[in-house]
Length: 299
Ligand code: PAJ
Image (cartoon, rainbow, N blue to C red; front, side, top):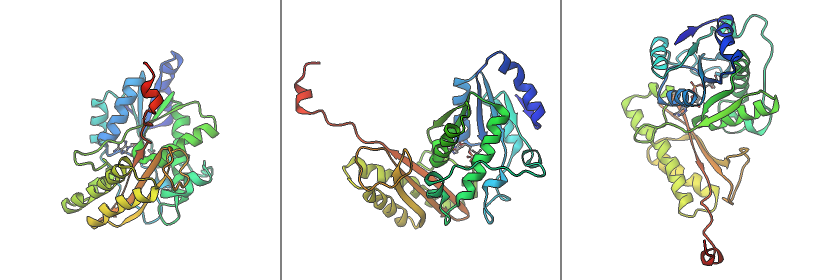
């Protein structure tokens, strides 16, 4: 595995494989790798000839008072883990390189996708997604991958990035991959490192709440409110007061009242100790019961 730190080095390393038409996959990350990150690298390894991982703790997606300075970092361990996954190129740019003097451009997905859930002013706010889309646009332009890999753990982020590449004609396939969890259900996150043993126990209520919402849907709940209430009950029993629990259309994050056959995203954000954790579950409608006539029809 090669570690590159400058854009010229990156371009030079990718020139030959690009010329020979090899499929290039990019996994953008902020480091402190866990199985979630590694699962994206594995997917890229399976589907691409050349796997590039970027490691950059992007300051512009952190608000004032968020955890930019405390964000966990361990470059050497990350490099070892990436190497074990067969990553070809680990790109670790500096902040100065990414945001050189006079930097004045932003890429912004406007509207409902970025103004709700994490994008609400009371939560991370719309600037958060502007930071994400701007840096991912830069990463995509620098690497020019055929495919880029993201986790559904950040479902809203994946939707926003898909919108950006559709709207701006980025010639890249966005691959949104399943959330990797601890055995008890807690979604893996670099921020889990902030949890004390006691907080770690309480944090599992987030995924349990989401399972409860999923169960409510499976047992025939008809309203999104019923899903939210099922999740809230589990969270509150564990003493976790969420910033939000919302059930929205998984396609465009619009509000929906009734579970009328459309896929629903139930999303939670909650602070447990110093950690602000997010998680979600995608609830897809059960396949329709076969009608009498289809039961009678010969196969
Ligand atoms: P980061 O939080 O490091 O996450 C990098 C990628 O790993 C994201 O696509 C995220 O959704 C995915 N991921 C995180 N936890 C996961 C889990 N438990 N299972 C599966 N995938 C998981 O997300 C970012 O960095 C940044 O916003 C970035 C896209 C790199 C832009 O700066």
